[in-house]
Length: 153
Image (tube, rainbow, N blue to C red; front, side, top):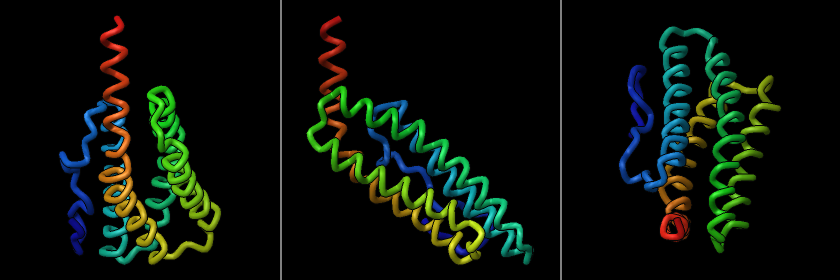
């Protein structure tokens, strides 16, 4: 969902994003919320013809850094514990995300409204590509790992 006017969400949480791993699903919902919060802040600034869109970008970048620290740590720990065979490839995708966030943070002084919108689109694409597709690839391994642990108790 990509609306043009302010007050609309940019991307709606969809049950198809759910992995069935509550801690990870809740963290993914947080990223969807961050994407929507940034989009809404940008659209409100545009509608009011104000240049305070930078505050929205700053807040979102800060939250993205916090999100990455927690979420990628948790997700990678679960994948390692479960012996997920494509862990290294998945971790590289996470590193690419981190690079984009850090690059956007470092280039903040050069940011324009357009680059802020590009960052929203990056988050949107990450949600649709990584969360809705790439993360689905490890679910079977993780759920099997949880079942084995549970049966051992």
